[in-house]
Image (tube, rainbow, N blue to C red; front, top):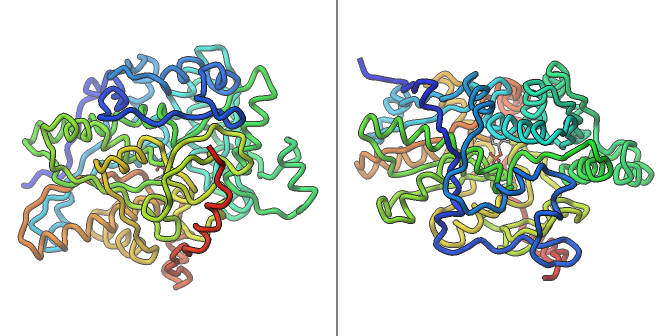
Amino acid sequence: MEQVKYILEEKEIPQYWYNILADLPEPMPSVLHPVTKEPIKPEDLAPLFPMELIKQEMSTERYIEIPDEVRQIYRLWRPTTVFRARVLEKALKTPAKIFYKYEGSSAPGSHKANTAVAQAYYNKKEGINRITTETGAGQWGSALAFAGACFNIEIKIYMVRISYDQKPYRRVMMQVWGADCIPSPSNHTNSGREILAKDFNCPGSLGLAISEAVEEAASRDDTHYSLGSVLNHVLLHQTVIGQEAKIVLEKIGEYPDILIGCVGGGSNFAGMFLPFVKDKIDGSHPNIQIICTEPSSCPTLTKGPYCYDFGDEAGLTPLMKMFTLGHGFIPPPVHAGGLRYHGMAPIICHLLNLGLIEARAVHQLGTFQAGVDFARSEGIISAPEANHAIRVTIDEAIKCRESGEAKTILLTLSGHGLVDMAAYQAYFDGKLHNYDYPKEKIEQALKDLPKV
Ligand SMILES: *Cc1c(COP(=O)(O)O)cnc(C)c1O
C-alpha cells in the first residue's frame, strides 16, 4: 500500500520559532511612526502589545523558544498532518508528487490558532486579562476567541458589520468560546460613532474595525490589542508549520521543488516557506520555487507598488513598506474573505522585492473549481482562501504532465471551508464572477499614499 499521510509525534512539535530576520541578505526597511515618520521605538507599541511580543517583532535572534504552556496547547492539534495527494495526482495523470500540509485540524479550523495561542499567552503573562481585535469574515476572531478560552482572557471582537449580518456562524463560534463580538462600526468608539453619525447603515470595513479595536485598547490600561497576520511576530509564530513539514520530508528523503500557498496578510504561507527560504539564502537549495497566490480581485503583490503605507484606513497604525493597493482600498465582493487586505506582511514584500519568492494572481471561478476538484479526490473541503493555492498547485502539476518532469510540490492548506458553505453555494448557483481589480483604482489610490 502507498503511504498517504505522515504523522509526527507530539514530542516533535518544534521547540523554537524560526526568525528569518536573522538570515536576511539585506535588512528590512524600517517601520515608521505614523506622525513623526521616524523609525518606531518599542515604547511606541507598548500601549497595544505585551513587551515580549514587541521584542519578537524587532528581534534578529535566529531561534526563539516556544514556551511550554504554548506547546502544551499546540498538542491539541499539532503536529499537523502532511498528506500525499495520491488520488489527485492520479486524477491529473501527473508525474509530480503533491504533498500538502493541512492546518484545518485546529479547533477554529485554520492556522490562525498558532499565533492566537501564543499572543494570548504573552498577554496573560504580563497581567493583561482583556484583548480587543477586529475580524472580517470571522476566522481570526474565532481563533482569538478560542485562545482567550485557553487562558481565561476576555476577548472583545469588532466584526465588519456586513459579515456580522451575512456570516453568522463564525460569530456564534466566538460566542461559544466566550468572546464578545459586536458589529463594526459600533457606538463603543469615537471612530465608530463618527461613521455612524454620517451613515447609520454603513456596512463597515476591515480598516475601520482595526481603528475601533486599536482605539479601545489604546484608551484602556487593562486592555491590549491583537493582530492576526502581517506583523513579524505573527509570521514568526506560524513557522511551526514549515519546521514540521521539513521534519516529515527529511524522514522520507524528499525536498520540495515548488512551495505553494495563499496570501492575505501572508502569515500561513510565510509560516511554511520561511524555514525553506533559509535554505535558498544559504545556498543549500538555491532553486526552490516559492509561489504566493492571491486573488486577481485583490492583486496586492502582482499589481501594487512597493512603498510606505498605513495598515488601517484611518492612518492610526505605523507606516510599513509593503506592496499595497492603498489603505483606502474597498474590497470587491469576492468570497475569499481572508485575502481581501490592501497590504501584505513586510517580510513577504521584502523577500519578493529581493527576488527570493514570486507571486501569481488567480481568478475566483478557477479557485472554486480547484477546491471542488480537490474535495472530490482528497476529501477535504478547503477554505476559499486556500483554494487559490490549490488552483496553482493543479496548474503546476499539469505543467509537469506536459513536460514530463516529476517535480515535488508542497502545498499549504491553511484551513477547512466548513463554515464557508454559502460561498460554495454561490459558486454552484452561478452567482460568482471573475473580477480584475482595475488599474485606474490602483493609480487613484497611489495619490493618497503618505509622503515619507
Ligand atoms: C486568514 C486566512 C488566510 C489569510 O491570511 P494569511 O495571514 O495570509 O494566512 C488564509 N487562509 C485561511 C484559512 C485563513 O483563515
